[in-house]
Length: 99
Image (cartoon, rainbow, N blue to C red; front, side, top):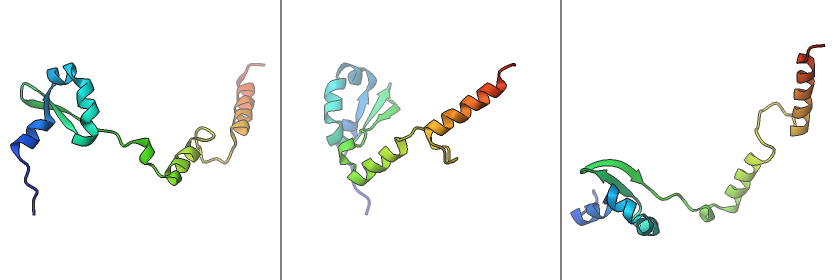
């Protein structure tokens, strides 16, 4: 069964760009409870402002997974450590220099 939404609920989520600019702090304080806002200019929807999921809601497993992706810089899939990669680049650079 479709959920019924009242006009009042919709109008609470529609905000003029001017009003948002003037009262951005209060809108952002309430965004997690409201869910999102649609900013309108001259009655035309322009942009949707939605909250970002809080980092604290990530599980420890997800945090460790994200950390492992960041450790060691880029994962190139060539099985080299950052030090080995630097040595390889140094050798290639030396070979390119005129003798």
